Length: 376
Image 1: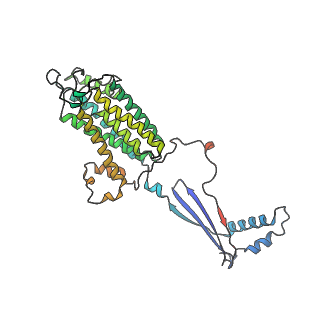
Image 2: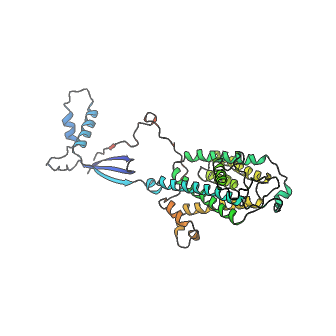
Image 3: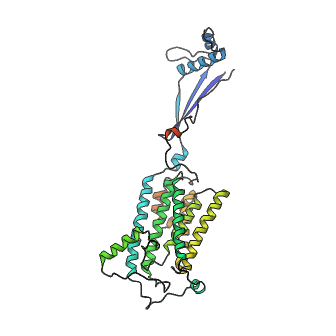
């Protein structure tokens, strides 16, 4: 028995499903239609078009007649098949929006905490700087702290551009914002429970305001609008030493750039450049004597461990068992909320963040109709 099959796969992008059109025709035993008609055989089609007076060749007339007969008399069956990537890596931008608000809220709350802690910092004449081994061997260089802030701004800009071109930017974005908010939340706790004296005599802290609420609000706004940077003149308060916020951003941006980019030779060279920007920025904090060595070490440890814990939980599906001790973290319910529908590892793929006009798009169809015939 001879048969011909027609497979037509159409990409239903609105519903994120494939529809497979399957047709089978038996030419040896003609199939009876509901009205009693039978499908024409190959010989019938050939005889029907042999007397055609046109200039079309005989093989072309045969193929044309055969396709017309198939479209007219054949039934089709639509089989929906779901796309695995669409179901395993949903965007869920509304969750990304929630984490963005979370990060922004903790950033503003951190500036409020800095203003509160500033009022408790002891005077340099009463409590001199604590001993620090790094400061004992490396003299202070005032201008290098500007290098730290410039490197930080470059890394943030590189990461923002990198993030814009990621295909799964919604998932990666909410991971970044969630971890950023968590790190600033921890920073608020550490700076509040233990207020350290200034790390160097050179530091000139802004006057204390005590009960001047209006002045404190003005300082909070100045700190937020200036990005908490010294080069913008917005950060003149003391007390936010344990742990270093500059080290947090230098480390976090580098870790995300490294994690969500390919491992080819060219990208590895790019990783080395980003690592140098981060490492030089951290060292310059210490050379400028703007933070104790303890502030920098704690900031790096908390940032890197939190990043590794979170991504270990996301990239290993087997950790969902009851013996997984990472499930005992206090932020595990938030993790389950954010990563509930992410069923696989996020691949390092890129896409254009802006939809191209129709004139620049390829007009060719992704799938074409395939016709095959086999003789008995």
